[in-house]
Image 1 (cartoon, one colour):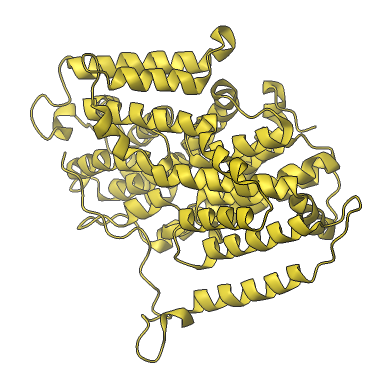
Image 2 (cartoon, rainbow, N blue to C red):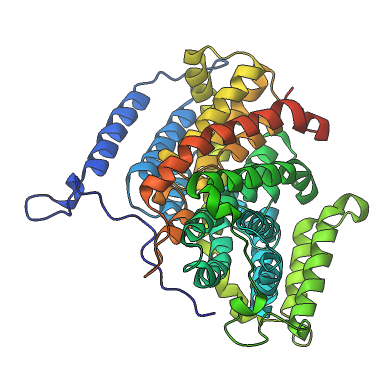
Length: 501
């Protein structure tokens, strides 16, 4: 199917904030003014903090790190500057101020999870190029006999993609042609179901990402920060065991919520039949036996995921497994795609962002700045026990998307603080970091809150959903999401090997 033409992923400025003209320079935009004032006050306060060398005191390096951290957070939250640019600038500043050695800053780019993401992206390109992903999606949704079945079958298919396509943006790009094909079939007979599907796709893509270590860059950031703090991060199988149950429950509950909120009872009772032929751009594209390329891609993907999940049995690192699979997928005789064609599709900007934010997280932990900041923030709230601490962390992580749009940036900001404070309240570092990252998967309130939401909100010549629809969905989905994460944190993950204390 031909790729759709998308508008800009950032929403147009609201009427109250007109485009700068002769009387309004660009730097006078309200959002930038608020960010500038907040930054100036924050930096001024940080520079006046006393430093010392005793236990719990803020060191000189810690104060410098806090200043750089504050600048980065304000830039992520209030300016249109690219997230990766801000992160690299923060990392460079850490080196120039002597907070971090040059070698350690550059070493973050060689972390094993960075290599895992590179190789996983190459595998994803091969799977997409083979046509296997669209064939599988079409086969699954063709089994729907009612609108409710269609919504939940779409949800199941999207959950599966979390294991094959790194990053939520990549999964949204893969799913968009499937949505457009379904819209072409349903827009005349089931117009309200089209809006339901338009909301279901990005909602499930974002919530189901927690099921896989490579489901979002934020997961890799969290794993790297936890490993830096306690020596052990999350491997693929451990993340799968913890995250997949939450991904399945939250995704299907969210899909049901979308269906109930944006369709009528009579809509849900109308029989439905979507044939594979209805979704094909050309005859035989999605039907018949698997092509050679599709069969090879299916076998390669299955073997790779099995090897990832059985690391404890064979001892081969997931990054090495992924690299081997990527080499097979791009090999001259067996491969589905050429390596030189796959590498340009790797999200290099995300990789640089992850490396730079890892450096910032390490600096926050090593300099004592994260501990100092955490003591100040949570000391004001009087949080001194694991239960209330986890509740506050989940609430803050869920609401953070209103301020910081990038999911990875939210983890880079919140997780180091959480990791620093968790031992002091008697909470397990990895458990609280995982709960924070899972909670941060909610980012549905605004079109600009997440790229998948923006991609499905702005498709040229296709009406999907409005900002009011997102606010209505978030009003119900946010409390549901918070409740689910807390239920899993207190009652489920402990039985799966990740207790809170």
